[in-house]
Image (cartoon, rainbow, N blue to C red):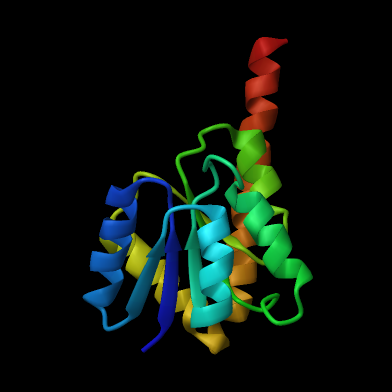
Length: 150
């Protein structure tokens, strides 16, 4: 199956992602920092990266920017996995590009389904549609929250 890199400063999240995805036949390598992730990408050449956003030092957004700027890594699918609850921050993350976004806590089933969809080359249209719907929903929530504060 696929080679996946799981990046999170919380070892328990890396273990959960690893257990979930290896049970579905994938090979998973773990990293606990942005710098470690960038080094592993060069040596392991993963098919997909599950990337936390909030990490000390280099955060997930910076890792994403660096990967996107490198022709050798720009096409690796990224699934942001984060506990960020601020809707505006979620919008910024989803708008960064082709990356997908999933919030913590997550169910192993949802993670496995998301990864399977991201690895399926025939599901690109479905992913784009889901990303558009997610952005619309987040924008509506931000609008409603701003109205309540006015």
